[in-house]
Amino acid sequence: MKKSLIVAALAGAMALGCAATTLAGSADGMKIALVGKSAGNAFFEIAADAFVEAAEAEGATVDVVYPETATADAQIKVLDNLISQKPDAICISANDVNALQAKLEEAMEEGIAVSSFDSAPNPDSRQVFVNQAGTKAVGQALIDAVLDLTGGEGQWAILSATSQAANQNAWIAAMEEIAEGDEYAGLELVEVAYGDDEPQKSTDQTQVLLDNYPDLKVIVAPTTVGIAAAAKLLQDQGSVVKLTGLGLPSEMVEYTGADDAHSCPYFYLWDMQGLGKLSALTTIALVNGDITGALDETFTAGDLGDYTITEADDGGTEVVLGLPFEFNEENVEEMAKLY
Ligand code: RAM
Image (tube, rainbow, N blue to C red; front, side, top):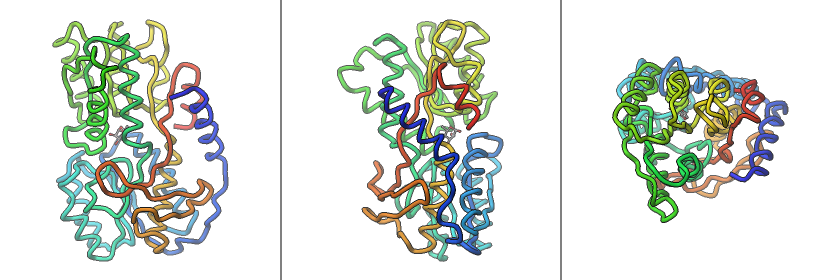
């Protein structure tokens, strides 16, 4: 991303963090369930805090629920329980693109509004998806980082979350598609490893990549759990392998730097508070009938501004929050105060 864009985006994020909510009262008495991919992941805690704050400011109550494991089966159990409680809406980050369809359709048939955030279940399983930063934009940023950090050629590997994760698989597909272009012809993707968004498994899988590919130049981890685990291992070992991906500044501060003492020169994420807030206000708009999730509908998400529902890469609909942000040694400490 161009530096000017990054600066503008960051300034926007800081400003949004301070601005007041303007829609107060639009969700009086509304009950919303927010379902993350797994417990114990700071990413979901940060998003949930912003979601709850925005929804409560409108008068809604939010039940934040995590499945026992980062699997579709565990989320189906959660959904079964939620459907019997009949909330007004469920907003979910999906552990699998197709496996939740029957349950989420059942919820919609029961009159429960279904939105998704972060990780989209397939188009039939949702009314609308809140996409943090366009899927192609994330794929482009990550593959360009690989190109840069390899010096244009050589072996790279991916350390992902679970093999079924809808969002990681969408970003990986976007990276692979872009990498077919001539500019990326010198790159060789050797493996996609899965750390299941568990710190220990992510560390172990990073070690396996190092052991199996002595010529490996770059690991890209499109998961905040994976990148933090890999960053520590590579830095502790003084490895020459460089790391990039999607991370939380607060978990990456000590590993971020352009010199050899740091494992990660730069990485990406998006406006986390904005993601929670936009997800809450989109969900409230669905329940209120301001939108149905159809293409080209527009709505005002409080002080975040006006949004238009657009076509997602999977053929369903989405609301895109904004652009991916780059974090590097110049801004990581400041941004770590936010998330
Ligand atoms: C992990 C989760 C989440 C993803 C981030 C980047 O925390 O897999 O779904 O969006 O990484």
